[in-house]
Image (cartoon, rainbow, N blue to C red):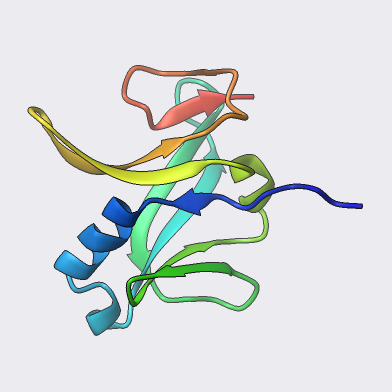
Amino acid sequence: MDLSLPPRVTPRAFERLAEIGANDAGKALRVAVEGGGCSGFQYQIDLDEVAEGDLILEGEGQKVVVDEVSLPFLENAVIDFTEELVGSRFTIENPNASSSCGCGVSFSM
């Protein structure tokens, strides 16, 4: 029995996608995990079209997609949007990461 939980998207992340008109442009927020970065893996976050095999997370008329390869790395993660003095960005709170770099884009497991 597979008890893994998909990532969760916060209301603020969906609100930001609506603010920038992602769905109006036919785009979704794609969250992927790739090899590389200073800690072994890195997040790739882009506006993209939905592809076959993607997990689609929907809210407020917006979509966040995760490909099949990245999904195990993002089990139970929280996708959010933050605004700080240094700028605003989509962030990932990943309970599977054993460590991460200071920028929050690279992590290890």
